[in-house]
Image (cartoon, rainbow, N blue to C red; front, top):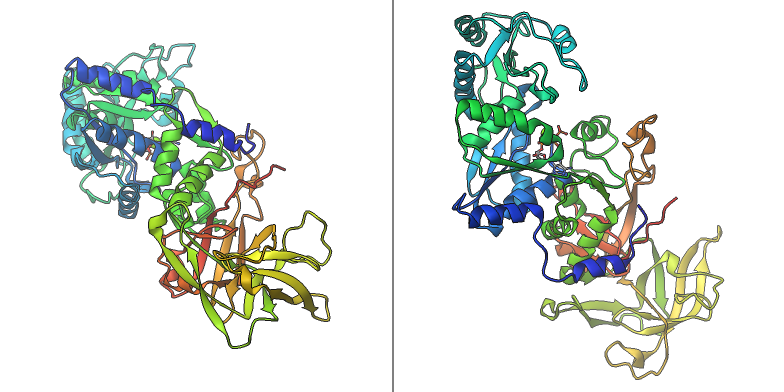
Length: 567
Ligand code: ATP
Ligand code: MG
C-alpha cells in the first residue's frame, strides 16, 4: 500500500479523460441551476495557532478552487477564538502561504474576533428565548452529567434558571465580575440527545487572556462551535466546506442558526488529506519544532507549506497534487510519492538543466592543450525550446562525481573505469587513461583522453559511449553547500501506532549536508526559490534562508526518479 506506485499508475491518472464532477461540484451545480444561489461564496477558516500544511492546501484548493471555478467569492477567515494559542505572526504566515499557493481571497479577509459583539448579542438572544443558561458547576460535574453515546445525560441543577437571572449573570460574566472558570454559558438543548454535541454544550467561558486583536476588551470568549456556524452566516457563505470531523457538529450549527433565524449556509464535509511517512497535527509539528528536531516551521522536511516552499516545491505542483487526489467522503492515506511525482512532473517541464558535482574528483583530459578552453552550447530545457541554450566553459581540468569512477567494473558499468569510454554531457567522448590515488587509497584524479571529433551536436567519431556523465569546469566552478533530504520518518504512519510515539520513528538520515560541492558558474545567478535540474541528481533550488547571509546553500526538492525503497 505504501510502496512507490509505478509510473504507470500516475501516467494513467494524468491522461484520464475529461474529469467527472466530484460530489461537491455536483451540489454546487445543482444549487446554481435551481436558482437557490445566484453565485457561490466559500471560505477557508484557519485558526491562527500554527502554520499551514499540505492538508490545509487541500482545503484551500477546494474552497478557493470552487469559487474560482464557478466565478464566486472566497473569504479568508481567521477563526481566532482561542487567544492563548494564537498570534499575529501566524496570521501573517497564513496569508503569505495562501497567496503563494496562488489564491486570492476575493470575498475579503475576516476575523471571528470582529464578530465578538455580535456573537455576544446572539448569546443574549438565546438566553432571552430560554435557550441558554449560566451553569456554576465545575468541568468535572458537567462532564459527569454528559452521559455516554448509549446512555442519556442528566440535567444540570442550574438548567431551569429564569431568563432574567441568566441574562444578569451573563452580563456580569462579561463585565468581569467573576474569576476565570467561575461559571459558563450553556445552550439549553437536550441532555438525552443521541448526538453528544447536542447535550447542552458550553458556548461561553470566562478567560482573562490577551487577544492579539481585541486586547483585553473581553474576558469571556465564545467556544469554536458557537462561533463557526454564525460566522459563516454573517458572511453569507453559501457552501461551507470542511473536513469530516465536523459532520457530528453540523446539527448543533444548524440548531443555532435556526434559533437565531439567521442565514443558513450549507456545510459539506469531505475527507481530510492524510499523507504517508509524515504527520500533520499542528500539535505534533510544534513538538518537532520546539524540541529542535527540525530547523523551524519551514524546515524542508516538514509537510508545512513554508517547508515545502523552502524545499523547492512549486505552487503549481501542490495544486496539481490536490487535483490528482480528488475529493472524497471517506478517509484514506495518500502515498507521499504522489506529491513527489507532481513536483517532478512540473519541474521536468519548467526547470532549467544545469550541472553540479556533489562529491568532486578531478577529471584531467590529458590530451586537451593546457591553457585552452572553449564554450560548449547546452540546451537549458529539452522539454521547452524557448528556454534557450547556454554556453558551458570546457577545458583540460574538470570536476567529476567520485562515484562515477570504479576501479573494478563489470560489463554493466557504463561510467568511468579502466578500459571504459563515456560521453561528457554536451561535450566530448572520453576514454580512461589512468588515475591517481593518495597514500590512503583515496581517489584524487582520473585521467582521460578525449576525441576531438566527438563533440556533441557534431560527432563524427563513430565511437559508441553507453554512459553520459555530468561534469563542471574546474576553473570557473562555484563552491556551494548542498542539502539532500530523505523522509523525516521511516514509518508509513508514524502517528498511527497505539503503543509507540511518533518520535520513535524519526529517520536519523533525513538530512545529509554536502559541503565543497562544485556548481557550474551560471548558478551563481540563481535566485532563491527558482528550481533547477542538476543533471542526473534531481531538482534543486537556492535556500532563501541562507541566501540572505550570502551563503550558497542548495536544497534538493526531489530526485529525478522515485528511488525510494522500503525497509
Ligand atoms: P487542529 O490540528 O488544531 O485541529 P486544523 O488542522 O484543523 O487544526 P484549522 O486551522 O482549524 O486547523 O484548519 C483550517 C481548515 O483546514 C479546517 O476547515 C480544516 O477542516 C482544514 N484542514 C485541516 N487539516 C486538513 C487536512 N489534513 N486535510 C484537509 N483539510 C484540512
Ligand atoms: Mg481545526
